Image (cartoon, rainbow, N blue to C red; front, top):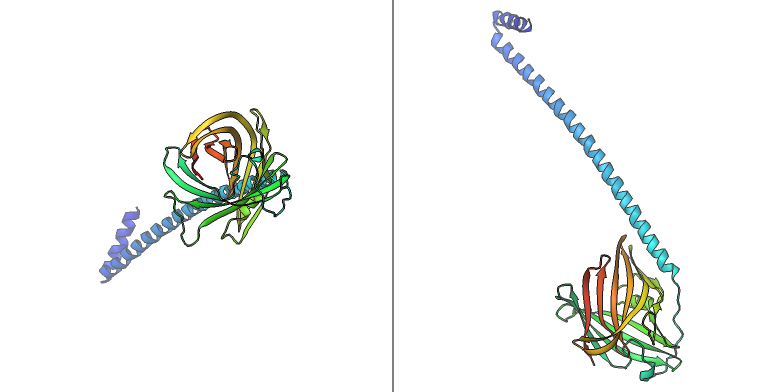
Length: 305
């Protein structure tokens, strides 16, 4: 019926002598109608897709917010754990001092001594090197400090930036047969970081380790601008006494295991380190493992002079 009515209208227009023009107008009107219908449908679909996209975006933002909240919570937990550990460095005098071998702790103990280390990945490829020099020893027999300067180098043994070497200055204090490693001082003395804030506690290692002996916990928290990093060392234990051979020599070493929990930018990295210490020399070898027990890196002494 509708088609018949349409033919009648067309015939009417044709009879009045303007059928072609009117037909074109009708045709154009129909086309415009179709175009508007298509545009409207496209707009409806676009709105649906936009709404769908906004819903997905809202879900994504919600997940991101949850992730940020979790990262903040993780960092706060790490900071709280770091702040919960306490410790103090004994006071030491400024007079020059030369310790005897009987006073040696598990670090290099001779002024002017230079040690070089290499760091390798799990496949044995060298990824970095370092050079440590004893700059000074001060104090008395009752309590003395050994001051170190350590330069971090690239895989080829060269400064990563020749114009601005990466130097870490730190010290240990030996008192009553206990070695105190100032974690706060170690990070706080890094050069070239003006906005660095550091807090933390000391690591203690007795000068006379015994197999089965447990060690105290230690921590360090570093803030560089808006970047927060925390390191907590726990569950230290002397596992064994072993002869260890590295490029720098063969040493009777005390094997120490420790749990390491590092949090940076809300991401947590848990693992274990095994370190072999020799008296009067320090760390001979350190192996780092992830939380699943997979070897990540090895650091070895290659020169001790």
